[in-house]
Length: 205
Image 1: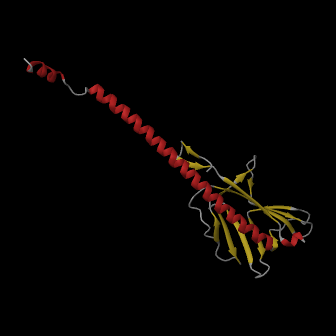
Image 2: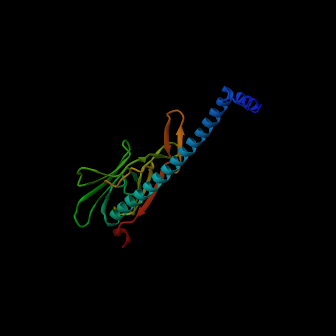
Image 3: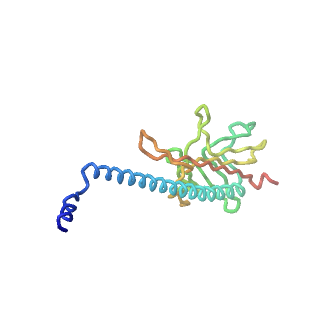
């Protein structure tokens, strides 16, 4: 008498149905997808922070080096095409070191995006990579070096204006945000602008 109800209860047990399994798999897939999206967002945020910090640090170091060289330099080039002109925009600057007499050249290669440094026209050394072209509203390129001349042949001030793509692999071997380009499927980093200005000591006294 006691065994029959127990046997009946055993016969009523059953496994999950196919519909229930599909629902469970769908919920699990949705949760997994949400987790992966969160991890990807965290990784991108970390990458942006790292790239931005690295580029700012290296950019400040390079800017400090260039302004220090400009302060001690003499006989700057390029000269104005007309002696009456006071402003010159250029993709390079040249000057002489007062102690050694060496010719120092700093130029920007627009094809490779490299800022190069050389002594006496020797083998150039990379100061900074990832320097991109800036343009005016009408599409005119903005050159990175801007020289202000006093009447005559003495430079008064030199301004360096660079736009750099953030990259944590930039070195002195001398993002703000990541935007996904749907056409090329590549990550585009918002450039960082670096601006510095210096007066040669000869113009201060």
